[in-house]
Every structure is written in C-alpha cells, then in structure tokens.
Length: 311
Image (cartoon, rainbow, N blue to C red; front, side):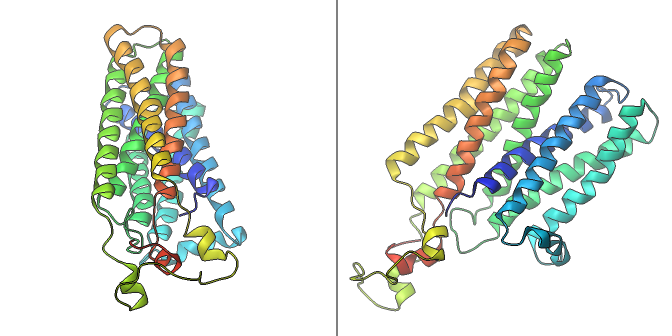
C-alpha cells in the first residue's frame, strides 16, 4: 500500500497524544497527579494538541475533507466511524478536565472525568487499530495483533512524553521511567511478533485464483498501458533488503536507544532534562518509520491482477 504521510502523521501524533492522556488520567485517578498544577495542565495541553493535530491531518487523506463529518453516521458497522465518535466523545471529559486544571478547580468531579478520559483514549486507539485489522483484503493488516500494536505504541510514546514532563518539572522520574521502559519493551516485543507473523505467511491467495487459470507464471502484458489509481495506491512495493534495513532502524531508534536512556534514569533518576528530549526525538523517528513500513509492506489482493503471485 502507498504510505500516505497524512495518515502516518495522524496515527503517530494522535497515538502519542492519547497515550499521554491515558497516563495523566490514570495518574490522577490513583492520586499521583493533582489537577491543580502546571504539570497536569501542560500535559493535557500537549496531549490534546497532539490529538487535534493528528485528527486534522487525517482529513487531508480524503478527497473531500469538508465531508469528513459524514463518516460519523456509520458507527454501527464501520470502525472508522466508531473511531470518530470515540475521538469526539473523549474530547468532552478531557476538555472539561483541562479547563478545571486551568482554573485551578479541584473536586470530586475530576476523578470520573479522568477515568472517562482514560477509557476514551484506549477506545479511540483500539478503533484506529481495528480499522486496519478488519480489512480482509490485506493480509498484513488482517491480524489480531494489529490493534494491540497500536495500543502498545501509543502507551509507550505517551509514557515517554510523561517522563519528559516530569523531568522538566524537577520531579523524581525513576518510577515513571520504569513504567515507560516496560511499555516500550512491550511495544517492541509485539512489533517483533507481528513482523515474524507476516514473514511466516506467504499469502493464502494466488494469481491463479484471481485470474481463474492454472499454472500462471507471469503476465505477458500489463493490464493497463499507464499507471492507474489501483497501481499507485495498492501496488506500492518496498524491496526486502530496504524493509530489513528500515526494521533494524525502527528497533534501534524507536526502542533500543530510548530504552537504554529510560533504564539509566530508572536506576539513577539523573540527567532527565538532557536525555529525555533525545529519547523522545529518537522514539518519534522510529515510530514514524514503523508506521511507514506498516503501510509500505502491506499487499492488497488487487495486486494479483498486476503481476504479484501471492497476496
């Protein structure tokens, strides 16, 4: 599949925002993060900003962005509609919580608002992953691991941002660094399992099945004399050697380097303001590459009509 940069920005930015929203809300629920404080206010501001940036960028992938609101009407059958409904619903408790933090209002109402924000963040990211996992025409996406990979990446990137906020606030970052390290390790492990799974399955459908012929070796002539929409959007192909190189860079920049920095901080609690900007930048580069590969390595069944032998 052709990697759409607007969708890559949407899934990585909003994923980090929902991850940060989840951890902030959870911290408040357990009493570790008071609402009346600049740390909570700044964290919610960054989380909602990343979510909004991601949602706005997703509309640029549409042919008619002004009609994006119509996607909300099919929530009974479409994961895309459910994602939109969940995203808008999450804005309500998170927005009210942010306003209460801005005004310095603390009370019993903040606990249910934080709980609803955390649930909404998880539900929205789950729906995003299910958009792809529900597509049977793309074997690399139609897997039960996909929504869990999305959730783990969101949790890891959000936890990294939380450690960054704690570091600049001058708070003890050892515990949050350990939590972020565990989230990052889980995300990396799930991604490795996902890659092994797609590499082990060559594809259940063949060109013979698509064309209704037996013993098809190759097509003598292409179906079209010039590239069309299907060839551009569905027929994107990344060479195996490039994919392996990019996978290693994802593991290095997205998981290993930030993990080493988090491990150092979990043990010592020092150099947070110095190491965390580097860790967040490295993780962002790794996660963007990971998401690019998620699209570039996907093979649509329609490519069986354009020369692919399996999909």
